[in-house]
Length: 424
Image (cartoon, rainbow, N blue to C red; front, side):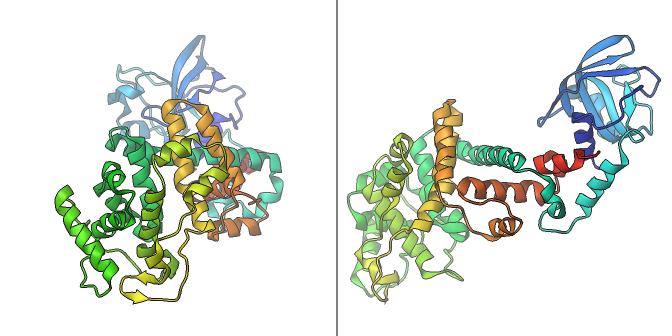
């Protein structure tokens, strides 16, 4: 038995509640189980329970053993003052509240169907890609579809926490916040943190002053990223180095700590190329987040992001080393990546922050219009016949795998819930 299963059993009342009594023999009637609480305090709040002849309104706390109440020192915690019922799997010790009164306790271990416990054990013991892999035909498509919508909302809310934390750091400057986030996205995973450090070091107010000059923007970005310290041969990097030396003193800029990685990376993803593309995006746009926020179609967004690095980079992947001619466009896949991982979460966070559903709805709508992501997680789900027809599907599947399947939180998953309660 685990506490998350006990919470599930209580929430959905999956136990024999006939002649339900407390440990002291008083009859219990559950009028309202309460709402699951994700904050501090009891597991379920706003419950209504009739104990004996008295109807109580308050909270319900769950433990595997009643003695856990003392282990966690709940009697000394004001968050647990309003507990009206202690639901336990095993009632191994009498519990008293802070006033010395017996705490109403109910034991469930002999009231839960054995089939439910066996199904739960099978899920917990599973070593498959997802615990319920062998039971999926039992789940209908409507359940999966509704669950995907909730998973995507969860994922966007979770990502919004990071966005809103950065928003506070920027003193609620949305353009600055977006600059930090999109810069990190251009860094791909391996260079993401360092790219954001670069963005944090160069305010959008400075970029705005120099956006009309690509060499100046590149000098600011490459210099702050620590890529202009070498002794160059070609004129272009020599010029950038000279430019950065001037602006470094003017704006008191410092190269960020850390070293950009080029290892095990396709040349198209080299940090030099991504910084050059980021510089061009700055050059060709103004008040970028405001324009994105006001865009009415995904087509507009893709057009804004459809830029290429300047001419020097058509013949280079790194400074001083020429290569065959290739226009260094951001590319369709990278554009989709930026929309999925930066634009849509930031737009959703903006809607949350301003309590405006139109932006949240737009974010969800755009996810449905973008091609599905292809990665190890989505490919594995596709083999199990999960639909993955757009980015909403793929984001839902990633959330499902990372936050539920990997952690084996089956009782909290709509699929696991369906499987556990069937023929309970």
